Image 1 (cartoon, rainbow, N blue to C red):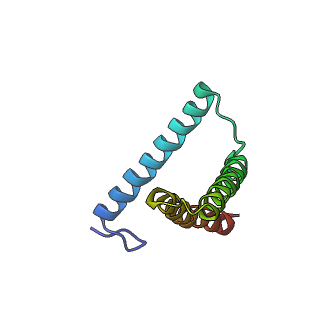
Image 2 (image 1 turned 45 degrees about the horizontal axis):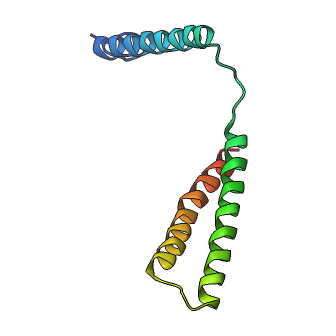
Amino acid sequence: MTDAVGMDSNTLAHNRKTRTDGIKLLAFAQVEKELCDLSEHSRSTELLIFTGSSYVVVVVCVALRLVAKVSTKKAKLDDWVIVSAVLLSAISIGCVLKSKCQID
């Protein structure tokens, strides 16, 4: 059976169920916010600042270690593994920063 808008009864029932589910989720989120005392303030900026500054400290420490090891000619495999780990972690940090910039 089709109504005046051209939707059959199955589509209307599905739309009603979807709308009802959405209202329930919204009500749940509001109750959760009240019970858990959640603020609307996002801490993503603080998290990015902390992550970025931590990464800078890591890069400086690894660079100093590498300079010391190379200058004394004692660089071994573990030193190069640390350098590769720092470089690979730059990829994930770059992706996070890129996604953050696109959201804002």
